[in-house]
Amino acid sequence: MRDAVTTLIKNYDNTGRYLDSSALDSIKSYFDSGLDRIKAAAIISANAAGIVKEAGVTLFAQVPELIRPGGNAYTTRRYAACLRDMDYYLRYSSYALVAGNPDVLDERVLTGLRETYNSLGVPIAPTVIGIQLMKDLVKAKVQEAGVADPSVVDYPFDYITRSISETSI
Ligand SMILES: CCC1=C(C)/C(=C/C2=NC(=C\c3[nH]c(/C=C4\NC(=O)[C@H](C)[C@H]4CC)c(C)c3CCC(=O)O)/C(CCC(=O)O)=C2C)NC1=O
Image (tube, rainbow, N blue to C red; front, side, top):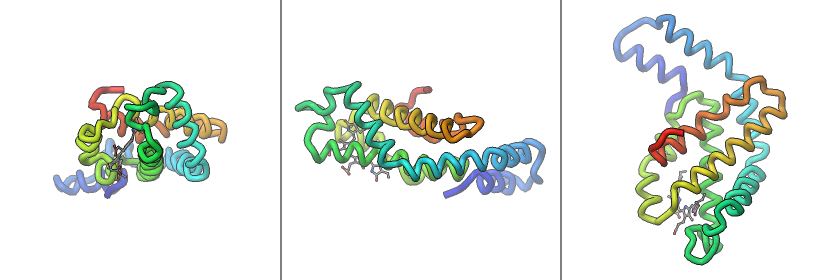
C-alpha cells in the first residue's frame, strides 16, 4: 500500500533517476493540499454514519425499486449489505485522501469487486449514484468547514466509480 510520495520515489528509483522538476512539483502539490485533505478525512470520520445514512435514504428515494421485492437491496440482510458497502467506500476514500494516492483502493476495495457484484446481481449504476451522493455530502461539509478548494475530496470517489463502471465520469 503506497502514498503519493512513496509511489513517486518508487517510479524514479526504478529507473535510477534523480527527482526532476515535475516530480518536485507533484510532491509540492501533495504537501500543499495536505491540510485540506486531512481536514476532509477528519470530517468524514466524524460524520461517517450520518453520511452513509443520508446517502442511502436519498439513493432509495431516487431508485425505489432497489428495496422492493425483486430489488437487489430488498430484505433486511441485503439492505444492510448495501449500506455496509457504502460505508466501505466512504472509509477507504478517507484513507486514499490522506494518502493522496488510490493504491489503497486498488489493493483493498476494487480487486475483484466488479466480478463479485456481477455474480450477485448487485447493480452498478445505483452503486455509482450512492458513491457520488456521499461525495457531494462530504464536499458540502468540507466547504462549510471553510476548505478553500472542496474539490480535493473528489478523486477517491471518482476513482471508485470509474473503476466499477469502467466509464468516464
Ligand atoms: C472492503 C472491500 C469490500 C467490498 C467493497 C465488499 C463488497 C461486497 N458487497 C457484497 C454484497 C452486496 N452488496 C450489495 C450492495 C447493493 N445492492 C444494491 O441494490 C445497491 C445498489 C448496493 C448498495 C449501494 C448487496 C445488496 C449485497 C448482498 C447481495 C447478496 O448477497 O445477494 C459482497 C458479497 C459478500 C457479502 O455479502 O458480504 C461483497 C464482497 N466487500 C468487501 O470486503
